[in-house]
Amino acid sequence: MQCKCGDVAFTKELERKKLKAELRFYECRSCQRISNAVLTILGTEVATDLGGSTHARIAFESLTAESAAELLAPFNSVQNEAGQLGLGL
Image (cartoon, rainbow, N blue to C red; front, side, top):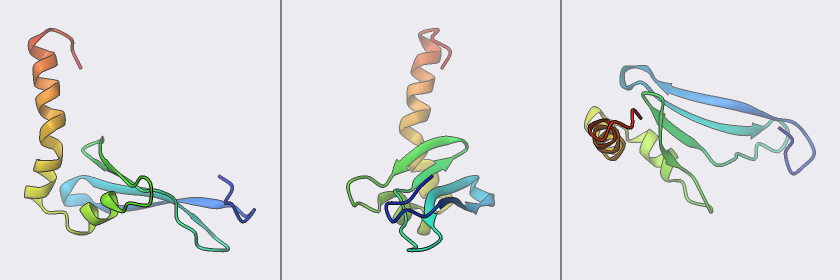
């Protein structure tokens, strides 16, 4: 990916292996500009930095087993409801 400064931005990934969590973003090698981050837990995207917010980064920094379960809960309930309806999500 190309940065606004014209140089190359590389994918960075931070992991919390015990919680199966990953924070992904792009960082420019020249100006160190960082893109919006995406937080995934168990392969499900649960938080994103958008519009200048740092929601995903803050969630990743303070992530515990309990907070990971809370972030996943809405997605799990949708999957459970879809399964009950026979949608197979």
